[in-house]
Length: 209
Image (cartoon, rainbow, N blue to C red; front, top):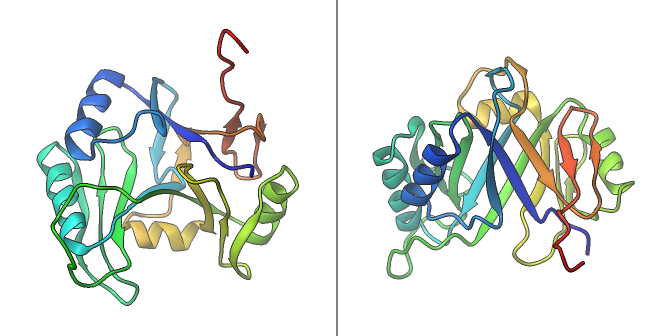
């Protein structure tokens, strides 16, 4: 099944960013990669990354670790209609949602991340859905023109589409933004640039391929 293998965050200081993501989340560098960029960017970059965990205690652990590592608090971790979660902004500017669908702890607290979800804030959800389907991705859950979730292989980065204004509200930031998105998707269906300017790159070939 075609899916998003990984994402590449474009940051001003890859060394500092790598230190933050190791201390805060212990992230798998195969799924979230870093590279240097000085492309101008300002305000909301039009996307968030979500770390999905099993229970509120796990969310709290990563939430505290992120703040201790230098993240900015956008939304405190708390219960909601859909579960429990909070939002932080990494020093490089990336907005992270730390979430679980569970509202109570059912086991020992861990730092285990069950899933990484990339949410793109787009102007026209239906049109962008068709764009990605036309390039080989398979739509899973879909709620009209409000939200789309694409299917993917286990261990991949799950791609979802949301209205830009609604995603900014969820993230707790103003909707305005300009310049580079500072992110690239990596997938066998690339390379291309989608209707909202998000770039998808093909995976790098290994020397023996």
